[in-house]
Image 1 (cartoon, rainbow, N blue to C red):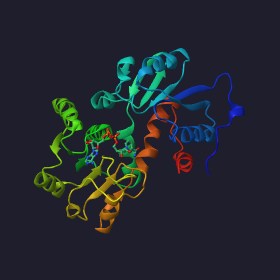
Image 2 (image 1 turned 90 degrees about the horizontal axis):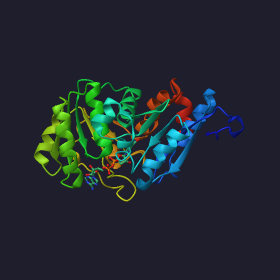
Image 3 (image 1 turned 120 degrees about the vertical axis):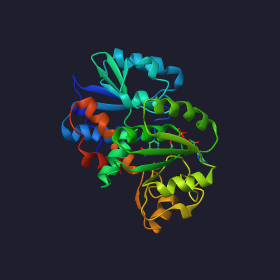
Length: 291
Ligand code: NAD
């Protein structure tokens, strides 16, 4: 059951929180955040605004001028918005991306909750990955956010495998910077099957952070050889539609524990909620609203 925001309880004191990006009309964040504000009796309202790259500066000015409490930021603004903010959290600075803005009396701080959401979803599913080794398929925005947070949380070794496309080149510079900050993150070529096989053999966690397995490629996986799936592996997919991708199905059939991307989709909302309101999000309400 999802509930609509209680319009009648909006007052002169209600604080506005936005979602900036394009497109945003499919987003589940407004229903999830508003249902939770209402259930918890918190005086906030969350609205999505379709903002493309051409209007990023004006959107940030509006956030200041209207004294909004903050915003979520989605594609295509996650990187482009950074020069317009006053400060960044450590994870946002390392990942070079922002998906949460907090407005503290005119000071705008950019944060990133995607990686935190992923790590919280593992904990929620009962998996402690501190000290373990992780292989990530992909090196795009989500992969980098997950890798940075995993490293900050104590995952001991992270290898991102990407095909030799534009993402590979972009990730190379970023990962060199992370290595200079002593984060245990490496980049490798997804076409190097011997290296991939070796890394997965030594890994505890395998994460798909590519779109392979979504609508249009439902029967595919980014993993070139499914025989690399060993029963000891924890296999995660960041894709949340469908909930069970082919990778997760094949992994479960081989005895692996699996975590779908729906957990990250839910849990990335929690750190943002806490930053804006100062209290913990009621995850039972948020979960009901999301699904
Ligand atoms: P992105 O466009 O920034 O990166 C895409 C990555 O996938 C790149 O590394 C690219 O090289 C790789 N890739 C694309 N097609 C490929 C193919 N055919 N074979 C191998 N590699 C391929 O995208 P993103 O924002 O990082 O998102 C990646 C996935 O994560 C998407 O499916 C997205 O829906 C999902 N995601 C989920 C959540 C969540 O809350 N669960 C949050 C963010 C992203």
